[in-house]
Length: 129
Length: 426
Image (cartoon, rainbow over the protein chains, first blue to last red):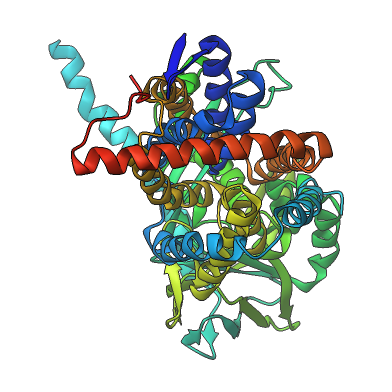
């Protein structure tokens, strides 16, 4: 598929994009996380698109998944309003405070800390310790 | 036709007799020597301890069944394990809305060794076996009466996100058997479901301690004492002579900021999810991945929340931030709609299927799979800190900034009504 973006033309392999997007969507709606960290590498590495087209478009694609996943979870009765009400303001506040703090810390250090943290969390989930 | 009709009254009589007979005999047994029961408190404030005392027939085994009476929760189980007898995978999905939010049976103190053995089995312990070994199946009654819907699922039905076809209601025996599996799936640990602390004197007087931990459902709890006077073993069949006490009730209260989550069946201090969500979503912004990656496993590990509720409740929290992000990008025309909607359609289908799969897996499977996903994510993160990636990313970010600036300028120009950008998106 041909895609025009700000005067540049890109060839996108939609078969790879759709299969990858589908799998990420199943996973992310099944486990209830946003698929961004997987979507961006899919579009930049597997589809070979530059970052500036990916940032907005991947968000749009993920939004479809989140909206549908939310609807289906509600349909199956997996939604708890009270829990949602005490997390939603926190998520909004976090989204507001996050970028302010981000300016003051090195992204490289944060990523390395996050990396180590994720491994520890993963191992505890896998029951290693 | 006429003859058939004439048969009905006889059939009805026969059925009535069949139903009435066991009921009548059971009633006689209960009325004859039912244990007495008394509790020392009738209210609890977010959990606590209640002592049950009473008198049972001398030499009887005494069991105390405690269940929350007015708070029910959902429990479900997917049976995808091969049946060793038939060699077929049943693909059955069981769901109930009537599981008591709190349930436990106190067994005689002497049974502690059985409970310890079950605990040593780890996650694979079998509730029905432990009930049998401790003799507590004589007292198991509240969950045995819940209404369980069973669905025949097929792989195809699961793919299109349906629970499958609703099967005929199960009979009493099947319901009881399945209810034990649902109870185990819901409460998971031996310690929550059974405790060995009923002490009996030779004359039949007994004392037991009901421990209701903090964070349980508020409302009425009912306590029923079962005294087993005799067990007659006849080959595989066991006839149990038992007598049940009247039900006594106590009330558990929880006060703000602890609130009861209806669909999770537990009470939780609502500051906790708030603080956790705040900290994790800030960290999520910093590391460039959504907070859900950390929030979900932390919530299911720290709190007795079902994974279905966690997944289904965390997901909508990001809807708003995603929506506002899309709005901001679209204002400066920084979204390629063709690409976004194209891949979005595939993701729409994925999002349709995923939530169905959540309720088909157990909490342990959820945790395990999440662990694997996090390993992959950590790998991706690590790759993003390698020098090669950083250099490439630096260039990419510079181009991104340049384009974004241009786009913002264009949006401003378009607003002021002058000619649109020559490089505008088609």
